[in-house]
Image (cartoon, rainbow, N blue to C red; front, side, top):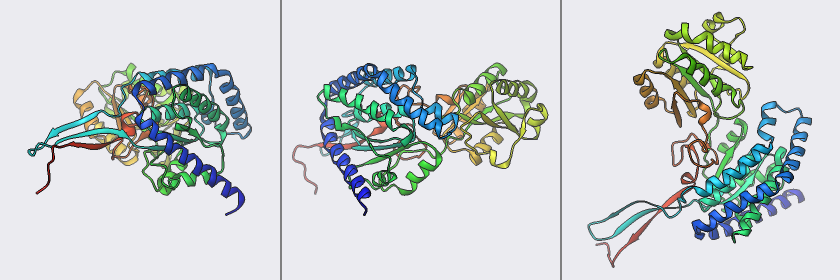
Length: 424
């Protein structure tokens, strides 16, 4: 092992040990103390907003010099409004019920033993994410409120922003009498740090949550030796049924695709019921193109507007993360659902319909973490679910699915109260 690798390992193991020690304190902290910490964190974010903005501007300038995509720059940039949103997010999390210690179920056995299933923290959570500075605050706060310590490893392009944010969060922790090591940021960009986290940092990490592009999530899923909450892709669909109101179909389709094109809840494909073609196809195409979206369509969609580009086979199931959408005509809800099964990623899919039976079939049969009726896929967000924020979105089927908020960051244990019972 060379000198640099040895130094990285020593730094990471120290971070892991400090997180484990801090988590023991967090697990015993009262809800009031954790909420005091969150309020203090929010105050520190506002107090140092100019410092955070300055560090972020350096990150953005560096990324622009590298010529990265505009969607990446959008995720990286912290405007005054986004910094304030971070602070408000912390206050929102403070106002949420504390899941730790909540009794999920309880019952008494015939022998008189009383059994309770009680929520407890998972432990130390490693969050590996690309350059999305808001994740730093959201992940740190959600982990802390749910009694977990957080080790945050953001992308190298956002390292200055992440460090500035975590320093503010740590000051808030200390003011509330909690250990600063409850929320730590990995201060080095060496990829070996990620490998050490995926290996569990000598048993100090209990869970990994990746946030970022397909290559990052795939690496985490393939290499992690600890449990992972994640989604590989956000290939989200909007199906416009023949019964949909045209105005609603247009409004929702444009919002689902164009509100923010680089997030995992952005629609990547729009399916239109052939029976509603005359009412829906041209208005949806025109509205999207006027909003700056490139449409790649099948033969029928191309025939409706010369501005539509032909869709390649690879466009079905493509996560564009840009102002590009694939559009296809389908034969009703059955073909729409079949298309989603073939090309979707079990993330978020929506139906626009006035036909309640079609909508209920879609909600029941589409096997995605989030399914919506008459609403934009851009609502795939823990904050919009009332979770305060999210540490990520999971498309797996064990433990957590959909936005991962406070409850999903707990596990449970059984507490059994007896009166001297023995087993015969």
